[in-house]
Structure formats: structure tokens, C-alpha cells
Length: 110
Length: 107
Image (cartoon, rainbow over all chains, first blue to last red):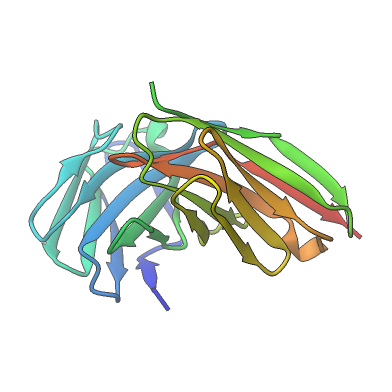
């Protein structure tokens, strides 16, 4: 079974803090993705990566950056957290077309 | 603009009452249509991939079908444990998600 894990289920941060969200997959997948999910807006793609040290912007990259130093790990960084980044963050990985998701991190920025 | 629209937004069923969820899409080059199930506070769980019109996939009480413009997720004799949000997504050069259908099945 594909296993995608995320470092935290819940996080509470202050405005202006730097926030790191970690994602690890154990299936040697080439592709990894970060989404955010908000009520009424569905899942929106923030960044994705098709290989180590490679990254591509998704639909809403502003205010975020990513890091992929190892194949199994894809990190999402909020350089200076803002209240409008309060959301559910979902990581996914894939080899072909099918994406497998982690459990999500619910982030609250105060 | 590529779009994925799911209907209804919410559906309430009695246990055993069969129904269908709809996913209509407008993309120029479909490379796959995906159905996911999402329980509250959790990540989406993969259910099916459909690649071409006429294709069908089944899993327990769920059956997914695909035409050139839409997909249906048929739920036969649902049980309360089928309650969840069902997400549809289409793959063009990236995955585009619909907003989901919230299904509640009552005993």
C-alpha cells in the first residue's frame, strides 16, 4: 500500500512566523504535490515536483516555497505566515497519473 | 477554461436508497478521470481511474462510469459507512478537482 505521511495533523502559528510542513512517501514515487483545501474552493495546487531538486509552480504559489532534497521528502514552506493561509494542506505523490494523498495538516494562523 | 463541476453539492439518502453523483467536465485533452472519497478531517482516498468513454469500474457498492462530457458515481444500496465527500478530478496537464458532493446515508 502507498503510504504518504505528513509531519503534523494540526498546527497553530502566529502571523509572520516561518512554517515548515513536511511530507514523506515510501513508494519511490517520482512526483510529489502540495495542495490546499478550503470550503467551497476545492483542492488548489500550490507547487509540485517531478524530481529531486526540481519544482514547478501550481495555481497559487504566492506566499509559499518548497524544497525537495530527497526523492521521498517534499517540504512546503510558508516564509511569513498570514491569516489567509489558514487552511487544510494536503500532500500527494504519484508514479503515473494516480495521486495518493496524505492525511492532511490543518493549519491555523492567528 | 478547464472546469470540473460536481452535482449535487449535498445528498441525503436513506440506507438502501440507491442514487448517482454527477461530475461534468470541460477539458481539451482528457488523460484520465479520478474519483476519491474523503472523510472529515482526512486526506482523499483513491477510488477509481477512468480513461475513455464507455469505461466502467466497480468497487463494492460503487460503480463509476464515463462519457465524453461527464462521469457518474453510482451508489447501490448505500450504508451509513458510505457517508463521505466524494471528489472528482480530471487530468489534463495537471489534476483539476471538483468541489465535491457531500453524501450522508442515514439508517
